[in-house]
Length: 236
Ligand code: F6R
Image 1: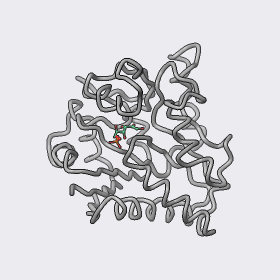
Image 2: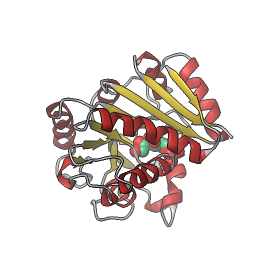
Image 3: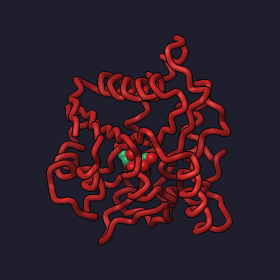
């Protein structure tokens, strides 16, 4: 496990973007696993800036996102597909057809979960997975449970996650109660993992995840078992 302390959010974003850009420069056909949420926004901004300067080429990159709200279509501004287009894909030279996010409007949820796992495996797996961490230790939308869920699956979001995500909606009632998320196995099979955590409110959970017992009640604790985990953090 490599721990990289950042001075502030801008520094964290630059450091995380550096790791992603090194991946893409060294392996232009990389499959990147991506996350939404507020933490990676600065990382995406930095990557866009470097792309605009001509330093990174995303034309052969493929991406798979961790999760999507159930019941939201990609043109809904609250959907994760929309978030990714707005905050990243629309500003770089990635081919849209090479960007994948679970379909929150699929007719059959189970079938969609199966399709998503198959897709990841057909892409040859994930080279570098970017992760944020929830206050309860969730990664993707893998919430604290009695057992680790391995494959892509439907989750009922926790009260605390619904509350935390309400900041992106007009009211808490609008926050979807369910989501599709990649499972722990797909995340752990990524060849490299980059976890980003920002803010004093993330300090406790990051410490529990990295140094506490490995337990499904702190889903991120499984990352201790990954052989190539980098954590970029700023707890200021
Ligand atoms: C987002 C995701 C979530 C977030 C986590 C932290 O795709 O899967 O696990 O990474 O909720 O979110 P922020 O960065 O907003 O604190």
